[in-house]
Structures are given as structure tokens and as C-alpha cells.
Image 1 (cartoon, helix red, strand yellow):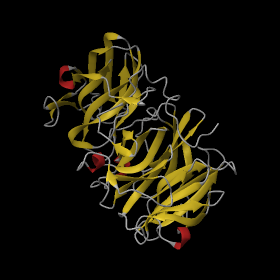
Image 2 (cartoon, rainbow, N blue to C red; image 1 turned 180 degrees about the vertical axis):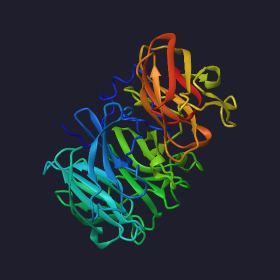
Image 3 (cartoon, rainbow, N blue to C red; image 1 turned 135 degrees about the vertical axis):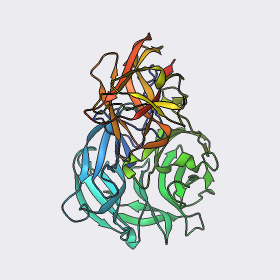
Image 4 (cartoon, rainbow, N blue to C red; image 1 turned 120 degrees about the vertical axis):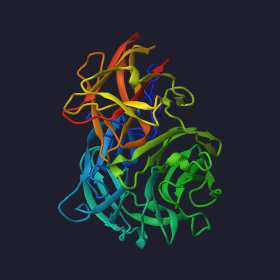
Length: 451
């Protein structure tokens, strides 16, 4: 069974009894121990599972893979495979750029259709590219790249309407953001439906669109750079005309909490989730994800920032995070050659340093309290002065542990998420130690939810 919209309620019913949290801007470790690599992503919902399809930036700026991950709760993501991978030459060869991959299912052909921004390393081509697949996360057949309707295309998106028709959302400097109808098989652009620049509107990029009831909502970012951007939205009852003035939806001056729109995930006929990228322009693999629930009333959209939030199956489709107890690393037990290091941004002005390495440094947190007996999200506050990730093996209540990634965080502690089963009561123990022979991050504290 396939859906044109993505219902949140059924898929998240099992989350309500636990404290699985989305942590905007945090390191997001997948079961393979690596940071989630699906930037500029699009989403498909099928048979109770979400699929996240995005850019693999583990190799930096140049194209490596279009990755696909799966999840049943929007919090725990598992790598499934690559839809497309680098080839020896051609569009997908070395030193190529592939951005903002989006997939929609074609009801008539039974094919999944992938569109993406395709370019040279100096962004001199400004094309789109198309590929098709027989399954959402399988291998795709690359078809071609081109300029849609003979015009440049940079940031792009896709939209599938209630009637099954497909549309390309495409931006270029001369014609602005445009809505373009697609052929019946979704592989060829046919006609301009609307252009914001031609209608005197703002110059915007990074488009994403949903339809709630009989109203279309277009979201986009201003052309002011990745990290200086108050993203905005506009609404209309028709794709062809009647679009309202662009309005900001996040706190003014927040630069949309340092993020850029990549996708808007429709969760019901009155709710949606903002999916944004927090790009690190000089270290793209360290870019993170800013996902936040939207508050939608009629045609008015607002959004607030949260340290974390909990997807649920209630009316609002989310709730504020539970209260947390802070466990300071300097009050924990050190092993090996772990010791205090200065940390001006840490809560106690020191952190647990020299984790891992040849002297097997570790830090053990004991007496951790949980009010639930089951799966929960723990935030590990850390520092990492390297440009590449550090890793730790994290053991919970005597298990063998799991590899957890920690991206660059040089001045102020950042969060890395750990999803683990805790026992109800105060008898829980968490050990953070090196992974292999490598150095782990400096640990500031653990933030453990209490219900």
C-alpha cells in the first residue's frame, strides 16, 4: 500500500510510551556507528516504513552516493543501500555534484522516479538528472541530465498532488523559482505552471511543498547563504495563481535556527514537520539535521526551536521532551588514563578527557535513574576538536556496547544521541570508552530523560 501523503499517527503509536527523541543539530548515529549521511533528503512512506533518501557527504563536496535509510519511528534510522553510486566517468563520475535527491512513486508506471540537481564541481552546468527504480531503496537506472525546458536548474524539489500528477520545483537565477508540470511517467518536464520571479515575487531557493486540505504551502529559503537565512513560506488554493506574500515562520533573526529547507513532511491534514539541513560548508560530512514540528493554523505557519522533541501519536503529533537529569562527567568514575581537561563551555568548566587511546581511558556513570523500563534517548554532551568524527564504544548496563559517532564540536559542547534500554529505577550504568584504539571525544555530561 502506498501513500501520497505520510501519516504519522499509525507509525508512531509505539513511540508514545517511550522517550525516543529527535535532537535538532545533534550527531545522529545509525546502527553502523556512523553519522547519518542523507543530506538534502526527500522521504517516501510505504507499508509502515519511512524511507529517507539523501546525499552521502562522507567524501566531502564531490558525489559519492545517493543513500537510502529506513525507519518506523523517524528517530532510529538504518542504512539500506545506495540508489546511485559514483562511476568511473560521466554524470556520476569523479568530481561531480549531486544534490537534493527526491523520489516520488508513479502510480501509472509502477516506478519510483528520482530527480536531483546535477552539476560540475564549479556549478557551471545547472542541470537536473532523472533515474528510475523498481523499489524505493533498490538500485536505480540512471537516465540522463538536462536543463528543464532549456533553463538552468539549481536547488530543486518534487511534489505529487492528490490527483497523482507530478511537479518539479526548480530554481534558476533568470527565471526564479518555478513550478513545472511533469509528463505522465514523471521523467520529463512539460510546462511552466507558475514562476515567482516573473510574478514579481522574492528570489528564493531550496523549495519544498505540501498540500493540507485544499491549500498548497510552498517553503523556501532566501538567497542569502546557507547560514544566514530566514526561510519563508507562501500559500495558495491553486498552483497556477493566487500565491500569498512570503512570510517567515521561525523566530525572526534566527536564520531558521541555522538551517535550510530540504523537505516538509506532511503528518496529517493539519500538521507537518520541517526538515532542514544545518550545513557545515567547509566540512560537509559534519553537516547535521534540524527537524522541528510546524504549528499550522489555517494558512499561518510558525515554528519554535527545541533542544529535543518527542514524536507521538496524539493530536499534535509531538510533545516537548521530558525533564532531564544531568550527570556530570567529572563526578563519574574514570578508568585508564582518563582525566579532567579544561572546558570553558562545559557546565562544570571541565570535561572528561583522554577517553580511549593507548591507555584505554573511560568514564563510568553509575546510579542513573529512569522512570521507564525500556527504550529511551540519552543525549551525550561532548567536545571534539578534530575535523573528522571521533568514536566511542558506549556500554549500557553491562552489554557489549555500540559504536557512537561524535562530530566536530570545538568550543561549546554538542549533543550526540544514544538510544538505549534503561531499567526503571536508579540502578543503571553507562560506560563510555574508546572504540578500537582511537581517541574518543571529551565528555561533558549525560542528559537522561525522566518521565
